[in-house]
Image 1 (cartoon, rainbow, N blue to C red):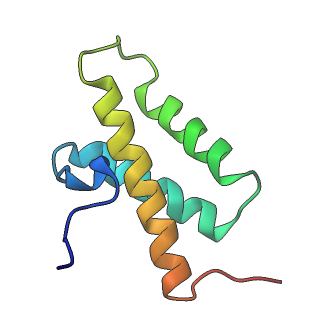
Image 2: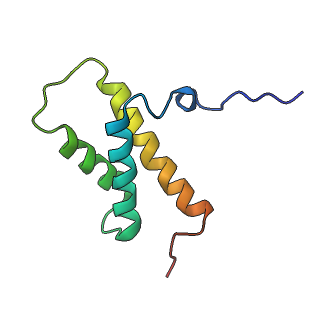
Length: 88
C-alpha cells in the first residue's frame, strides 16, 4: 500500500506558520524568475539577509529561514512545472 508520507520533514510544516517569511521567499523567487542576474541561491540569501537586517536574532530564526527557503523553492518549482521558465 502506498504511503502519503512526505519525503521531506519540512513539507509537513504549514506555509502559514510564518506568513511574512513565506511571502517574502515567494516574492524573492518571482524577482529571480523575472531577471536572474545572479544564482538563485545567492539572490535567495541576499533577500533573506535584507529581510532580517537590523533585527536582533530570535528563537525560531531557523524555522523562519526554512519557511522563506521553502517558499522560494516552491515558487521556482511551480514556474518549472507550468513552463514559466524561459530558456534562451
